[in-house]
Image (cartoon, rainbow, N blue to C red; front, side, top):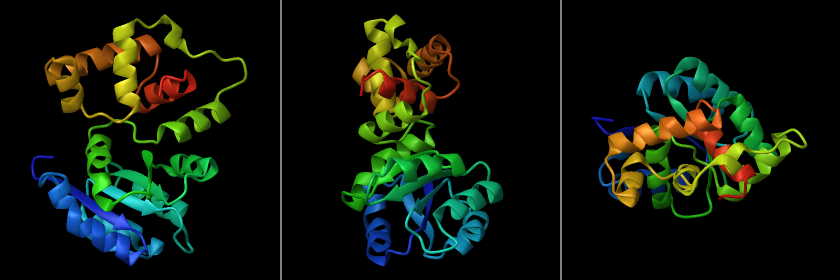
Length: 214
């Protein structure tokens, strides 16, 4: 993070990739830039090793060997690198398979490349990155019947923080909205995760989706 967010893109849509290369530095305030690209899923692992990116974006509609293999290969080659899946559509099954393969989240390619700056920053900070409707669908499909989310035990402040987490707000943004320090946000988040009995922000966001808070 000190030297900026290094982003690699595995996508065979040249226009989208060029747009991301062009607008991401400005859209992120100079924090993020594309350092490597490939349109071949078979080269994804090499890109992750050679370019040492912080984030790898993988389009889910890559031709064979396919996006899921690319995600798994990147995770194996660079375990500390976060991988985000992308697609122009938001089919739950596609996103679910990408998460199973090792992706840390899903980004729809329905807006402009500049729209990705905020979720990329949030993802690198460890926040869940998932469109709220898709998140709710995935949670509902994966949650055992009759299981109630524990959010009914949360107070209003907890619920507000959980909504912010689920919608991908960064630590800095939450600090500004709650008028507290980033250190306080991290402390409150840790306490919320313990209360929800989950180990990550992604799991917390999933509970928010199942409870209809996002």
